[in-house]
Length: 299
Ligand SMILES: C[S@@+](CC[C@H](N)C(=O)[O-])C[C@H]1O[C@@H](n2cnc3c(N)ncnc32)[C@H](O)[C@@H]1O
Image 1 (tube, rainbow, N blue to C red):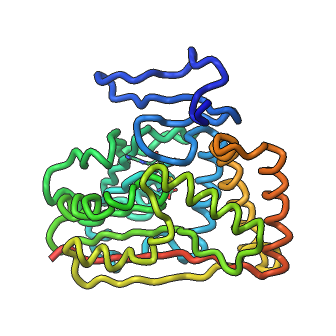
Image 2: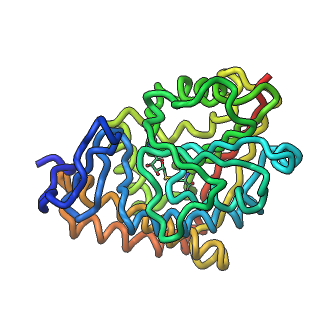
Image 3: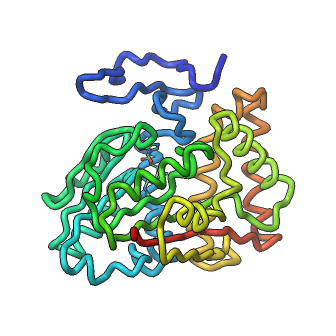
């Protein structure tokens, strides 16, 4: 049975409806809710939203804030902002709060399901990025996209970046932040998890090992003044509080693969054994994780 087939009743789940644009969803063998009409590899349920919120705080700490591109002046002036693949909407809400003159559009395949309602200056728009953005040319002064690694097939990155540029005003900025597979050194358990991730993503046309090319892709799409930064983060207790937080985040992300990996023919017990080995490996090897950030301007 393919891993995305449900073993539980889907009667309580919304089904596809062109009128409302609702996504088609299913529940996988491990009980994780998944969106089926996009190639997105990760689940979309409360557990994952909690992880994304938590990961947001890790990334905000690592990046020393929510904004890396040189857009402070534009934001103070109140340029319209777009957050692509907004997830929980946390980034959009915090930027709207910090820059009250900005209207922030939060775009995703599904609305955020946060217990906290969106403030009036954040407007949610539902859609599929891979079908194009439903906004006129030059609508935004700052376009932010973070962690779409599990959502964009490699062949579609150039078209996605051209689309981000299309909706950016002349002189406006695009910022991209991604986590790839840059985890070093890799002991046997980490190697296995990375191999599973690669195999499952490849089946959807994705390749997270190429994300160190973000800056080059942005330049090729037509952006100027492109800069790229790679940050190396510690994973595990050896890296202090940040290392512990990141280790928990990575473990939670790895757990989302239970049903897909079972679908590859791996017994669930073997999957959990490998995950248990991760914590030991990142302490022993003092594992670091690469974060890629790139930003550029629309000429
Ligand atoms: C890993 S989450 C990142 C969320 C947020 N950007 C953050 O940094 O916390 C990826 C988000 O992209 C959305 N997504 C994936 N593929 C998409 C697509 N084709 N169109 C629109 N949204 C998509 C998912 O629904 C999910 O909310």
